[in-house]
Image (cartoon, rainbow over all chains, first blue to last red; front, side, top):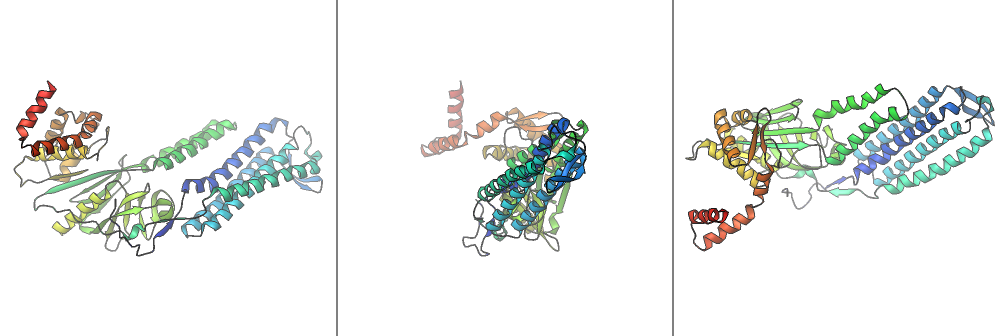
Length: 339
Length: 116
């Protein structure tokens, strides 16, 4: 649909296949494992001694903690490591590392998450029904750790196998030809309006995550106010999901369907408008208000056609919108007639 | 949706505006339930009087293309989008009429006859 040069002069940009799957493997599964481990330990809480044994030397426990401290320890180690390795993965993707590196990282991520989640759950499991944590049997823990290692290996293999083997090579969005200019009569006036919305699957992933954040505190029996965090975050991101884009003689206006935030770019400042193809994860590392993508910034809500605005001395602005060709042509038409 | 109006043309501005919205519906650029830009916003963008835009919107409402709701603006009706789907059939019909030398007035009369 977009006019593109037939020979990819800049060699075409490698983009990520199945980006949602990658995010699920890097962040979703490790965080879900952490949540599951915490939920199981909390379910056992009435049968567990206080304090709990959390470290062993040989067969005898030598480190103890309260139940709350143990939960915090699970959350901090698992979530901390999931985020650390996950962010390294994102950085690797953005740096254009080969898929092989990402698959190894995914294997490491899931193996470590499995080892920690199952291992820590096992260390609580062997203390069920004990009145004194000092009696916790190190030999039983050893058997539990064996199970944890098997789980870790299985999960690691799953992590490596789940991800695609190769990047997808997408046409280079940055090398699209400038949009033609609309022929405007001397007195003619024209306005173009379009809508931009967050990609459905990203929206779904967002809703699921927020729903989980809101439900988890209730499921594990923490006070209900914690659920408000999910609701609060949802309210905060709401203005960034649906946008209206307008081009008229004054220039380009991009504003949230709720009215704020909004950005205006004066027609007189615009040097050129183009219609380009944008890949959010590969070029901008994600969705939303984004910086990067070959020295551009903008509103990257979905894969596909986008309006790209060039101004003198400013970083190019991008907004993903249907009918970007028409919008670019109108901006160029005004520029040619009025400038 | 691209709307172009030209004061140097003989056709009244409100009719040009209504025709542009009709074209956008026919071309599938707007979907059922979509809210069109407010009359004030369009008037500002096109340097028109708000009443000119409202005149166009009222005509589109009378044609059944949009609904005008106080506070919610102009909403595209589902029936209008369905009518847009007839675009190809109508194009074929007009092409056939041209081939047979049937003038527009006679074709319109035939269509109206068929509706009775």
